[in-house]
Image (tube, rainbow, N blue to C red; front, side, top):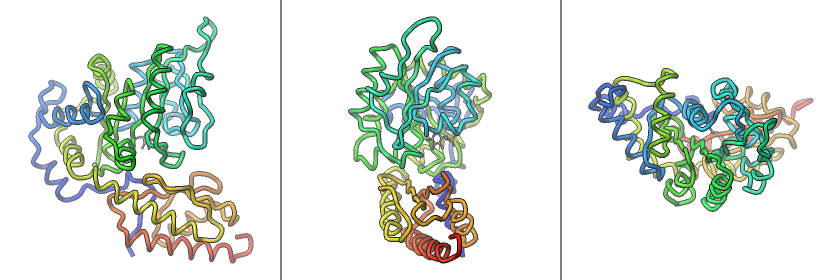
Length: 349
Ligand SMILES: *Cc1c(COP(=O)(O)O)cnc(C)c1O
């Protein structure tokens, strides 16, 4: 039986037509501004996210870090959710690279209000860190794939403007948010000073992220891209996958959301499991009522050919994507239900 990989939407494989588009891409030296395919991708993404300019990068992690490097001086402070990727999953990059301090805001959903952010701002004085950036995640990864509403982002932008801060969006799954909400991605991108989308998650590309912002922001971002070794040469081979994904892999994210809703509905019937509402392509499964540790369930399912990820002692995450069919969702649901029943029947299970 083939492996069903629900551990991450980063698992997607480039499709044959995507590979064909990559092979056929016209390319040039990106560092000299001569790669037409990368230039085309940057232009498309800037418009898509409601920004002036954009910059192709090797990864979303680099997009977050370059944004912080441009926005911050050493000693500055970045507000973010305590369960944000920038706080827990980027090797403390903001501290190491920008010399900035992350200020985590406790929020299970990953979403916080402008009032909460305002209460966390520092009084300007010599001994305090300087509040500088508000970082939001669209969708909230560990918050359950929830969507920051446009009005919430506009309020956050107004707060940022009042205090001279930058609003940054980690848009790893901003296209999932746009498709699920049925609005243009620019509704979410335009209120931000900087925003990026990941090509290598739900959009199904092998590599890449695109960071967008004002022309002045992107000019500075270019300096950091080069300094960090992220400037490439014939990157059009990679950007072509991005252009292909923008044409063919956005509307279909709705299938991933339908599959996630189906999985959540099926698993919510399983005794011992509590499932968070699936809004986009992330499904969180709480096993605490069953007494089965997440790591034990994960290991047992892996033996059966199903990969999902333990996110906490009694919490697992399943992610739907391009390479997961509706039939596989049915098989996965059955497999999880059977495995939970079996583990619950065991002493100590
Ligand atoms: C995956 C992810 C990133 C990092 O993106 P990479 O392209 O893997 O470096 C950042 N933020 C969130 C919310 C993510 O899910």
